[in-house]
Image (cartoon, rainbow, N blue to C red; front, top):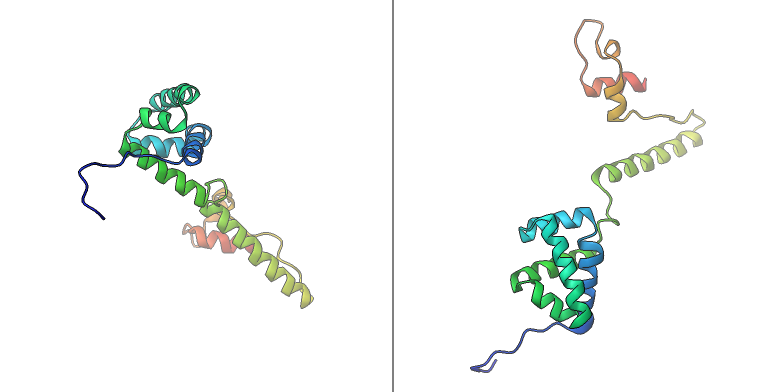
Length: 162
């Protein structure tokens, strides 16, 4: 790299700046979970984010997407917005399953496999698996052992599934 006394201007391609701006307005500020992440990363409040959206729309109409981003955000803030945009492009949170959903899907898949094998062997398929919510709903009488000891969650599962 040559030693120069001048610096190049910072710029973003027109389509990229349009995509980032559109994402920030339609998804970033509109989606509650992403808005909270943006608020946390930028150290801004909810009303400030909405004011930024209004400014972005106004400036975009007059000058364009890049100018809107450049006038509303500092370079550090714009880098944070770009990082969040990139994370969203890789895997939007709507496409990701929560840990509970993953667990439920795995249990359903396991149950399906077990029932398939039980059916092949001519045995009765498993109908119900107790969830944590079911275990909490088991009455107090059912959660006390014959000796008077209180059963823990695992023991409740076993008793319910018998």
